[in-house]
Length: 350
View: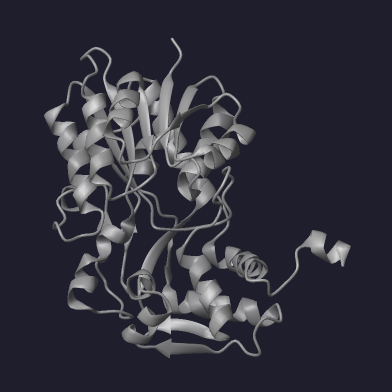
């Protein structure tokens, strides 16, 4: 019997790249993808002619429930905080018989770990607190309700308990993601590209206060390999992975200090002739928020974790280049988007 997958967020950065990885490895899977409109649909169809398009939004609960009923696995990439969508997908999967449980792999994010800094408005200072998904998994799955993404994490975790015989859940929790995606639409991440963008616009490097905060990171292609491992485990009836209360996976491949990344961005921009110096300016929380409202949290709060479970259980082995090595290309891409440089085709034409 053909394994059926329903995907949300297939035109997004994370979902698009993961879909690329899954289809490349397993063209035999029967995949349906939620799309908002025909423009998005055309982009998916142009890259994946066999993917069935399901038109709707995350607010269309009946559509999501019906697709989840028909699917063996739901890959939910679209929105880490959308309660209506999460409940609808769980409702559909919970209708599966006990002898054929459904699976859901939900995408959260390590922004869930910044709650303490955000609550105390402590931005730019280092923290020694490091979470892990192995012997520290109970702490990770019982974070306070004011933690970002916790609202939907709780729904997914509760479903694994309430419908243990009918569905199996896994939560993938990516950190700062970098690298150009391979999906059909959005191929751009946020944290690093936005830092490069505003560095170029402000004409100097930017850091939040002292710039000492830590985040973990992963290349998007390595992240997609983790999703593929979980998909293959679901196809194998759950074997080779842990699910439900132990189905929580961090996906880091090292960590960075944001102030050091700010220096790397400014240095790359200077070397590419985009800035007159590689100076990094320390901005207050308020000044940074004026540049981008979420900047104090994204560049100034701590999010530290260790991805033990994916390595031990799934055999996940990230191999892509580091965030530091990727930074010059990110700067180059942002400069091109901002019209500060010309692409290859434009250079040939002009």
